Length: 282
Length: 190
Image 1 (cartoon, one colour):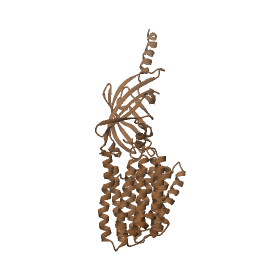
Image 2: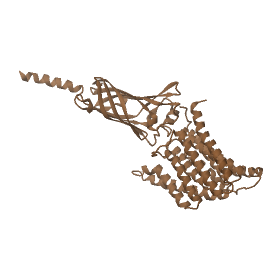
Image 3: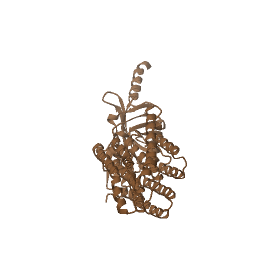
């Protein structure tokens, strides 16, 4: 098989297998402790993202000089902040600070000589901050753990395909890895009928946000595709979660609930196919 | 009698000046210059590419090569490998990240004369925001008047970079780490 394809599959698959094994154990151990479970799942997924990044880019860059190079650091920071928030330590203030920091990573260097960059900083900060509120509070209250994790997984996985179509195989690989890691957590959350907590959405917002912005600004990911992918999990705002104890009944409601997310993700992929030039083989 | 020799003396000085005098400055003529690279592909072949947009200048001191200097600025967005899709990929954050790092530069720090036609030019090469020292093996091709009478000097420089040192590590080792670079320039005396 093509050596680059093997590398990409390893880059996505190895972290996913590791996260599957460790998360399964963690779900089992923390069945009765949702807060500790959420903290552990967040840290495990953040570790998986950092490993996936290392496999894709051949290591971490310190100090980071490009927005994309901040991804592993943002994953770690979001996980740590999420852990603090699990113990009710200043969720909104920290989220706003992290949203602002992420916006500055992208646009701070452009502020001298380009005041429009300030508008970008403001816009990105608001979008990221509101997204954390929506995913951590509104959707989390209305979703089961599996619904939330799967919706994020679908968006991130589709982001991998879209980024690849948009000309960046590496951003695509990391996004696909993020999608698979979240998918693994979704499967476990479904079978354990457990919540995943507020750490996971926080990591997702800042890692996936950085991936999409990098794709739009530095590769050729269409903005329309990025926006559709970003709002796809918001479809879960509609309706209520199902905590049916029986798996078969839970699965039915689950599929219905996830349909809106699937439609938005399908539209995003369609837009990427139409708008993004085909990627190449090196 | 001495007066009769003066015009002859001036003529000799003029001819010498028409070649290369002390510390002459040259501007790279992009129309007659090329920047090429080649990189191994899967261990079975080489992919060649070039940069279509670049600029630069060099200074030549006839008497003291250590005073020579050269600087080149390459537009990363102008990479051309005869495959437009691949070029887009090379410009992406996977490789050059041309939207953020629009140029790659070389600025000499020292020049050592090996023989009349060969030099070793050491300098700082910056790619994707990473600066590393690089030594170019430089051969003098020729010096003389161009079609409009302007004085031209031609050089060909070669070196091999390790792209991983510049944090361009995507698809290693399937796409090789060593990048052979050839900078062939004609400069026009200013």
